[in-house]
Image 1 (tube, rainbow, N blue to C red):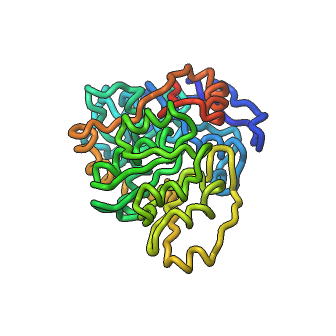
Image 2 (cartoon, rainbow, N blue to C red; image 1 turned 120 degrees about the horizontal axis):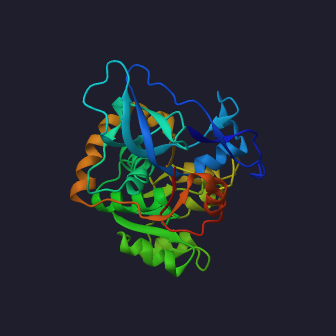
Image 3 (cartoon, rainbow, N blue to C red; image 1 turned 90 degrees about the vertical axis):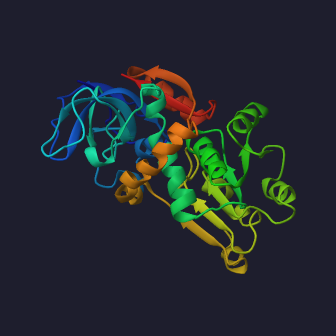
Amino acid sequence: MRAMRIHAYSDTLGEPLRLDEVPVPEPGPGELLVRVKAAGVNPIDLSIRRGLPNYVAGLRLPHLLGSECAGEVAALGKGVQGFKEGDRVFAYCPRREAYADYTLMEARSAARLPGSISFSDGAALPVAFQTAWHALVLQAQAGPGEAVLVQGGAGGVGIASIQLARALGCRVLTTVSSEEKAAFCRTHGAHETINYKKEDFAARCRELTGGRGADVIVELAACDNLDKDLDAIPAGGRVVLVGMGTGKGPMTTFRVSGVMGKNARVLGIAARNLEPHIPEVNRRLDALWEKSGFRVPVDQEMPLAKANECHELLRSGRFLGKLVLVP
C-alpha cells in the first residue's frame, strides 16, 4: 500500500514527506483494518515533522502521520464485535498512521459514520470535536450562561469549540484574523468576533462581556496569547491550553502573579490523556452530530501524494475549517 512517511525531522519542515510502498498492516486483537477514504490534517502533524520532543517520544523513523480518518472496515482483529467488513467508520487514530491506503483503528474507539456524512466530512470530525469536548466539558466544565472565548475560531478545533460551547448554552466569542473568517465563525454559531489584528482582544473581550471577561478561554495559540489571556478573564476564570499555535512553541512566558491574583486555573490537554474517555465521548457526541448538525467544514480535499503542499497550506493559515487528504 501507499504511505506518506517522515524520514527525517526538520524544524523548518525542510525535509519533505515521502510516498512509500509498505506492507498492509494486519489487525491485532481488538483492532480494525480500515481502508482509508479520507484523512484529517492537523497542526500536530507539523509538530511531529518538526521533531518536538513531546510529540515524537517513542517514534521510530520512517514514520507515518495522520491522527484521524474515515473509511471502510477491511478486516477485523480477534475478539472484535459490533463491526463487519464494509462498515463505514471514523475515529481518532492514536498510532497516527492515517496518511495511507490502510490503517489500524482500535475498535473500542471507532464510531459508525452515518450515511448522511461523507468520508471527507467524517475525517474532519474526530480530533476537532473530541478535543473541543476535552477542553470545554472535561476540563473547563463550561456551563449555561458562561462566556467562552475561542482563540482562533476558524480552524477545525476552533469551529468545533464554537458549536459545542453554543450547544452547552454559553455565550461564544472568538478571535479571527479577517472579515472572511469572522463571517465563517458567525455562520457556525459565534455570537461575537474579535479581529485580533485590529483590536486588543483582551480589552474587546471585556467590553463585549460588560467588563467581566470570558469565564473560559479555549486557547489554540498559547505561545502567542497566554500572558494576555490573563487580562481577558475574571476572577476564577479558566484558560484551557489546547495548542501552542501552528508552527510555534514549545516555550512561552506568562505572569504567574496574574494567575495567582485572579485565582485563575490554567489547564492543559493532550490527545493521549483523552484516549480512555473516547468511547464515552463518542456516545455523547453521536446525538449532537445527528440532532445538532455538528460539522467541521472541509475547505479543501487534496490527494495523499500532495501532503507536503497540504502542510504548507496548513502552516499558512489560509483556509477555513479543515484540510483533508484523500488516498
